[in-house]
Image 1 (tube, rainbow, N blue to C red):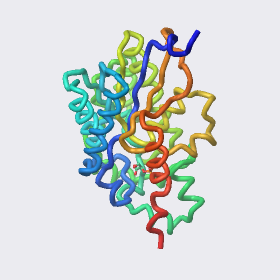
Image 2 (cartoon, rainbow, N blue to C red):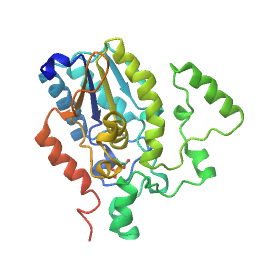
Image 3 (cartoon, helix red, strand yellow):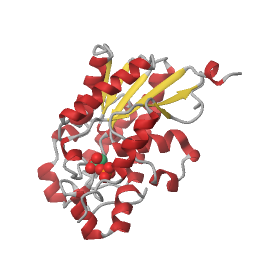
Length: 276
Ligand SMILES: O=C(O)[C@@H](CO)OP(=O)(O)O
């Protein structure tokens, strides 16, 4: 049977448009910067690509960070679906970049050397130096105190029990492996559940959480070594397709493959471009 007759569900995933700190070559993580004008245009273009592919999202899912929320709204405006439900979760926040947040990428590259720089940015176990606990407590925005409307009821009890015991900590720096661990429960208990009831889900998140979703959805097709080589372009939607039983059909594809390859290369080269 032809693959296209198998397809019953589509999941659209896109990284936010260019942020203010993407533009100035800074590590961003959980710092809540906005989109540049270019990033807003990239978001509109993502909407045009979704329209052109005749995809009709029924649910928008974003992180708690403004750059993903803004990109999601601009896309939904572009595709005339501003009315669809929105679910926002800290679990899709960008990887927390620890002490590197706010630092210039080229400066860190020169400080730690190319091998370590690549390890921190893309190795599944690469974790930046952690922000000091006291410093972190002062800076963390209360949006991240797990105040999401728990659809995972058992999770609510779990979190509240841990919080009471004071053992629940927000990340102070993360590896991709740690991000995968916080994204996976959300994907399995919310995203798959919404798709199972027939919704086309649009997820707008961040470079590391798109990579986490690729690792989770592609399973053993994408090894730890493979994921190291995957960089995610801003604002170009990728699509996963599934059969009626939510078995993945084929690999993901970008709605503008050529531009995706070009922009992913630019992401990979960040920090090296203006290395003196
Ligand atoms: O700064 C960040 O949070 C991320 C994504 O912008 O950077 P990198 O692509 O280097 O992981």
